[in-house]
Length: 118
Image 1 (cartoon, rainbow, N blue to C red):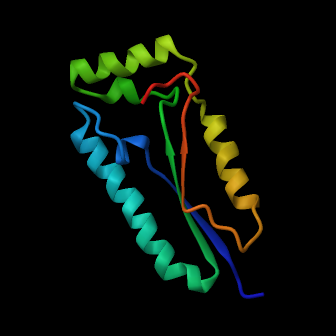
Image 2 (image 1 turned 90 degrees about the vertical axis):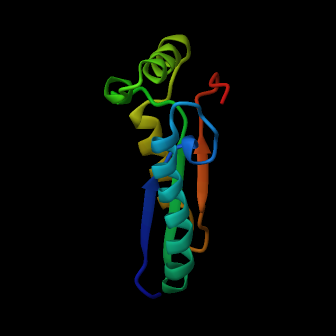
């Protein structure tokens, strides 16, 4: 079998959802998701699997780096109101994708906290 590899990018649901106050963040995540699709087309023939994981709210420090007060409050509210994803949930998803048979490629996977409305 030819050499193989996996490229798994982390994007966000913001890549495909319209979220007020998140236009720049959403644009950068949309770029990552679309670049992943393009790279998959080029590298799939070389036995490389290319995937994008698009998580919803993950309990990380991102709200601390958001400069818009409304957006920061929205994210902080979600962190407080629902059980968000953890970094280990994302790591387990990466492991799941990488463990699939070589002929299977999950091109995009959205993972959300059960209680997240968007």
